[in-house]
Length: 293
Image (cartoon, rainbow, N blue to C red; front, side):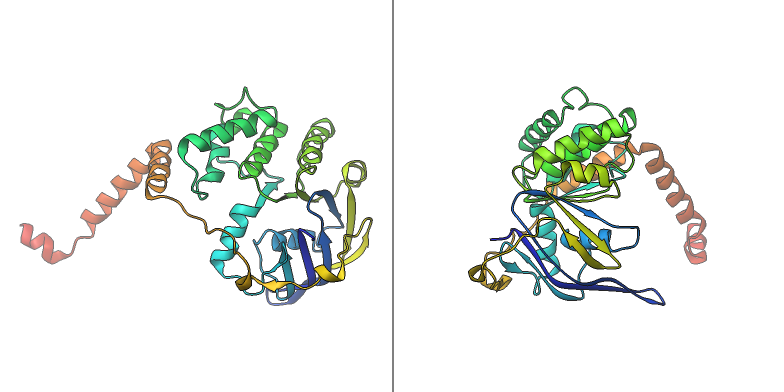
């Protein structure tokens, strides 16, 4: 059985002018392999990655995950899919500046119902695995680009997802650091599916199990296509199979995160509170002010 299958996926955008980003893309992906998607800017690579990650919705066709059709997925199903099955690695890292390295990895588990002690244990283990055991207490601005990307990889792995999606993971790194990041992704691909969008053809050729080239929203070539037998071709709607476990965040966790965020921005919080008080006093209704007199 294929881990993931795209069946005639089409996607258009209308921003005053209709642009067709994907034109009937059909691709199957195995359970564990490192797949690089290559193509010029604007060819549909990132759109394809966003659809696979549930960040964007296709217009026509079907995406089949573990033999489950996503045609009838609701927003809650997509939320659960992104949280439980997908790990994202971005070129810009997307780390939270005021939190430590350890907290940046822990936060990926806040919607998974994981206890605080377990979040801490798993985050520490993930950081050890990417070689950052001695950097856990630092803030992102104290790290190099390669270290920040390894934090992002640890965050992507900590929920043990089935699929890792990497959008230009080496785009902001030098050649030496790029090799280190690719070594980690290659190791990850031994146990799960890794799909990477990149402009770096040399790294793709050296590390990938498979290269897919896209041009103008269409697949031009696939170096190692994933096929399925006739018995595997039929997919059932999601309603007939077990759905992804819904995401959840406890009230305590939500309150704790909000409180921590306020504490890290004390100056802004105080100024906002003072402004609100002044604004309230200045714009009280005339009748209220008369009554006070």
